[in-house]
Length: 215
Image 1 (cartoon, rainbow, N blue to C red):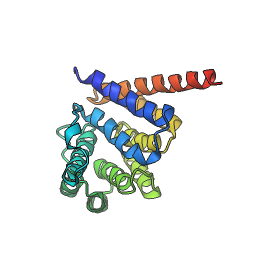
Image 2 (image 1 turned 90 degrees about the vertical axis):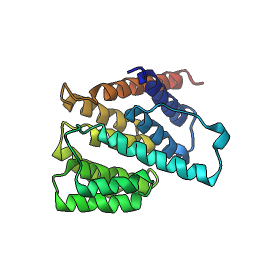
Image 3 (image 1 turned 45 degrees about the vertical axis):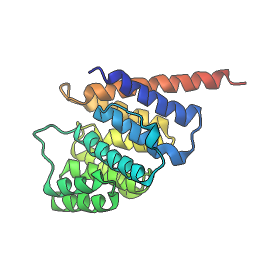
């Protein structure tokens, strides 16, 4: 678990950049990807000498897709295998093709309307396809996933990320707290979510203190 401080630092950097440094909203997709990196437990590596080339951009897009799928899978046990439609959709998501991925996840929900992971995958794919915007269709998919499995924190976590990218920090905090409260005591992802909520609270407090001391 030695990567936990790195994950915490990633969350701090992302939220500080967004709210204290007023990073343009166009860059929030990168922030969201960094948070997903933390959830999946990946180490962050810099490659400053390779930035800027089309090949590198494509590679980074594929890596982001891989992290998104890995992060979603964190909320499902190894014995909870995804359906064939979700597996196929994940293949497109890993390449950054969220248009095709969302269609396949939608097929999964049509075949089995009680498939929580399919609804969650659909919500995530629709947000990514909309460049970080929470569309009504994505919101419906997240809400459907949460209703089907209230104890699974995936829907509230990713919906919280979408609201965070929209600048609605309060909604993010509320959703993550609800997810943690409903989480089973033995859920493998519980500690990760608790850490993110703790760091988010610290950043909210820091922002409030700065606001109070501003001239």
